[in-house]
Image 1: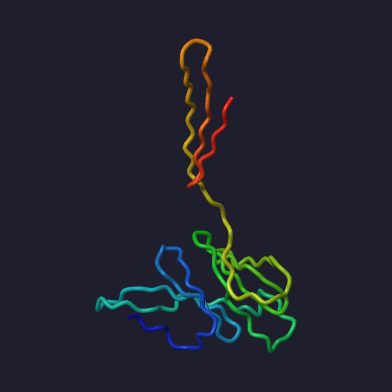
Image 2 (image 1 turned 90 degrees about the horizontal axis):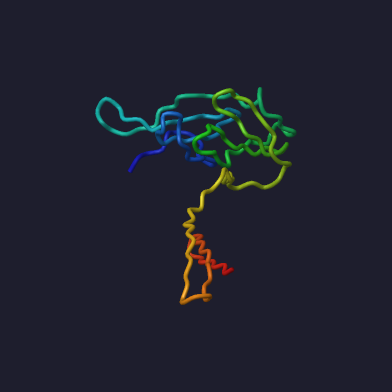
Length: 151
């Protein structure tokens, strides 16, 4: 078991850090804290606070008493999703560029849709039985679905 870093851990998002290690993103007061998991000199795994981004300088908040919430991350692109009373925002961790992506609402967890790939097997079969009796069939397999088109 790996202990969590000390602090207020009400809203935490697991994420992949830029070096492909496991990381945590959380908000404490008005700062976004990034904690990668690292192996120390004794060989034990621990969380190490690597970066702090002051949110009050980059994300608008309508009510100063409202605490922003980390609601997700986009793996592989270095983006964190943060919900405030002013809306849902992304922060690009490399440039610290902020973008509003949705209006205010209740966001518990954001799972960004990037893209998907559905492997398909396509083959063409021509069959004939005797002269003048023939058909061609196009078979397309998508996942567990088998689609047949006959000409």
